[in-house]
Image (cartoon, rainbow, N blue to C red; front, side, top):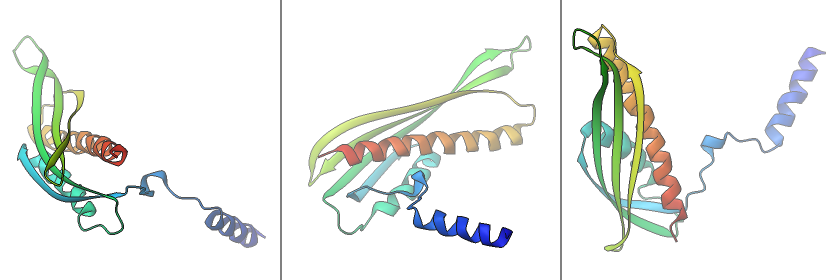
Length: 151
C-alpha cells in the first residue's frame, strides 16, 4: 500500500508542472562581452555566472558589460586591547550596460553584512570567503533582474 501511495505521489508531483523557482530562467538576453576591474575574487564569481549567458541562442537583446567591483572591510568596534570585535563587509559593483557600443545604463549595486571577529584567523578568512560569495550572488541576482527589465 505504501509503495502505491508513493508512486501516485511522485506521478502527481512530476505532472503538476512543479519547478524550483531558482531554476526557472526567463531571461531573453545575451551577454556578448564583459570587462572587469577591481576585486579579483568578486570578479571571478561574477564572470563564472556571466559565462552562462554567453553565446545564448534565441535572445532579443545583446549586452556588453563593464563591471567595476570593490570590497570594503570596516572595523565597527574594538575591544580594550584595540582588536576588532565586530566587522562590516561591503561589496559595491558598478555596472555599465552597453548595446552595440551605445551606453544604455549605469547601475550601482551594494550589499553588506556585519559579523563578529574570530580568534582563529584561518577560520575568519574562510568565513569571509563564504560571505563574499553569498553577497556577490545576491548582487548577481539583482544584475540579472535589471538586465531582463531593459527594453
